[in-house]
Image: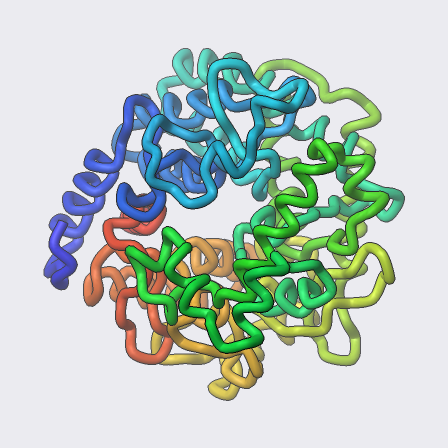
Length: 443
């Protein structure tokens, strides 16, 4: 698709469908062939949500294709690798096949992403004819149940909240709160030395992403060195959750992951009910505890939500767009929702010409072009609009949705956008942008 503006809803829909068709590889869709030539967990979930109204059969196949990557313990990895060799953090980096319990015949990463897949499954089933919808749920339910059971067995602690152990597990890879925490994590020694002595260009040359997208639109070299070094440390520990939780300095009770988990838990419960099944009692009780515990991440002083450092139990007091995610979970009170909406409408913070920025304007991290440190993302706008609608802020939800679709009209199906100028940034012909435009237009 050309990145030129699209003049009508019909043309925009048709162009979005072409992007998804071009990015499809069998039953799975890659985010963007050049920069992301493999299958990502929550990307496929967003693709399925967008396709559901137009081709629910393809949407169902997208989600079912994730079964091939599920580990014996139930984990769904954040990447399932194709045979395409052109990726800088590929199978040779993760070495998943060396780990007992990894899937046979396919290479994957060894960490996860937010469980949007369960929400997508409920959406897709609702778009299929009744008999087909039930058959789809029968097929996908075992995968989803095993995945939620893994989250609660290996990642949920006494607080009731799930912990995540790497910035890539949140999906917001270099979000400011995480980058503050990552300052305590080790970096690759040689790479960090090159940065200190002013030879960072040598690190840039080794990066695969900056051959396709300008460095100013990606993580900094230091951020990349730290995140990769952390993953390498987990690899040396055999990706053992018990060892990681005991030894890692980067363990977080994440606002966004847990907000999505709350919605996903409700979807899992609804799927079980549709199939006349009953969730295991211990899982159902743990899921209810997560819903109650999410509100413990509210900070009275700043009147916003912060993720929490599991080690110290201290709030990670660096503002970011995740503060709005409990709206999506539907757990926050009317008073807290009003406070969040006030921040959303504050021109000193989040009320930019092309909302919603991934970091507020008054953040020391803010850059309108730097990946998750300022740009506007379609998926976060989707979560926020859904949350606002659920909280009764219909006009605000509609404004965000209109602005989001207009961004795509203006700048094409890009990975993310400048909240100040509307310029499209990152990868082009990006799948979840196309898919979520389809969902907005369908609504």
